[in-house]
Length: 245
Ligand SMILES: C[S@@+](CC[C@H](N)C(=O)[O-])C[C@H]1O[C@@H](n2cnc3c(N)ncnc32)[C@H](O)[C@@H]1O
Image 1 (cartoon, helix red, strand yellow):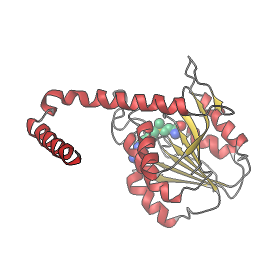
Image 2 (cartoon, rainbow, N blue to C red; image 1 turned 90 degrees about the horizontal axis):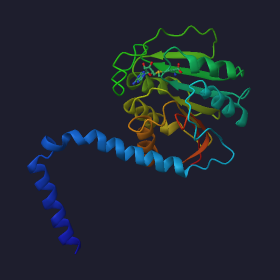
Image 3 (cartoon, rainbow, N blue to C red; image 1 turned 45 degrees about the vertical axis):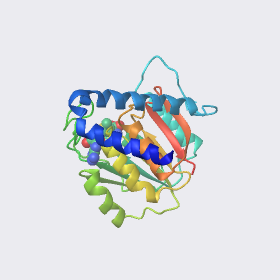
Image 4 (cartoon, rainbow, N blue to C red; image 1 turned 30 degrees about the vertical axis):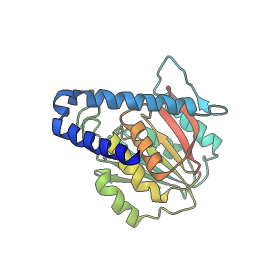
């Protein structure tokens, strides 16, 4: 039975590649991927244990500034206001969120690392944002705990890991705000060896099915990482998760 199945499977695969169905049906690839990821996201959301978390689901109004309330909840519930932390932000642009975190933590041993091309998105994001959008000048923040790394994450992050101590006892906050699937997945997989239980992942556009959510799915499924929800706002657009395993 197994052998028959293998033969049919091999025949059908070969047949499909010979017929070249992408000529006729290639236009279905994106909508099918989007549908698949939307269903996966819906399933993921329905599985979250919302008891005791900071969560506005379901809300009929999106209010982007609500993300600061989520950050405040993370700081309060994890007692981070004066604890030494290693804060990483991937996608800094004008540093609105970055400045918030620098001001929220007063411990002199904390480190704040910001990564960005500062020349905008390296590729288009959906249909509304094109390559180069969101460019900004490197923020001028007078605080010796802060360092910025200009360039593609793909060029700056691995050299950074060789010159900076990442295996510290300090809690890591990884803020993923690069919007793109490629950038988010690259960072999650590159920082994976340095993550430990209790570290925090923040996403800024989590409920975009083909981008941050897909990167999160690929990462957690490939690295067997498990997370607990700390909170979410704007119907899971901004999400805070704690690494649990
Ligand atoms: C939405 S903006 C960040 C906004 C910022 N966190 C805030 O709250 O003000 C996204 C940024 O990600 C950066 N970005 C995306 N992919 C990148 C990559 N692979 N390497 C470096 N920067 C990247 C873009 O340059 C852009 O500035």
